[in-house]
Amino acid sequence: MKMKKLMPEKTVLLSKTQWATKLTQEKLAHEWPQSIIDMVGTWEDFPDIEDIRSQQEQDVEHEHL
Image (cartoon, rainbow, N blue to C red; front, side, top):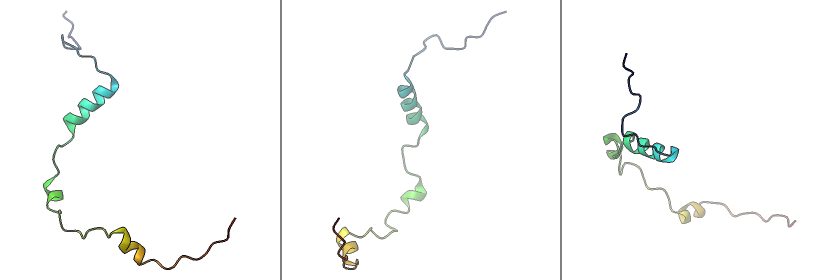
């Protein structure tokens, strides 16, 4: 009875980090889905910090410790 080989003849040993990196690169999409691309420009830009600060009320003085 012949035993099946569990590993290919040319086995490459990878560190866990290398293995995870390789798997991530193979499995993840390299492009945005069309539904996301279609959304470009549909939202208003986030306000500048100056715009945010101009809407705040005057800060009150605090007790010195």
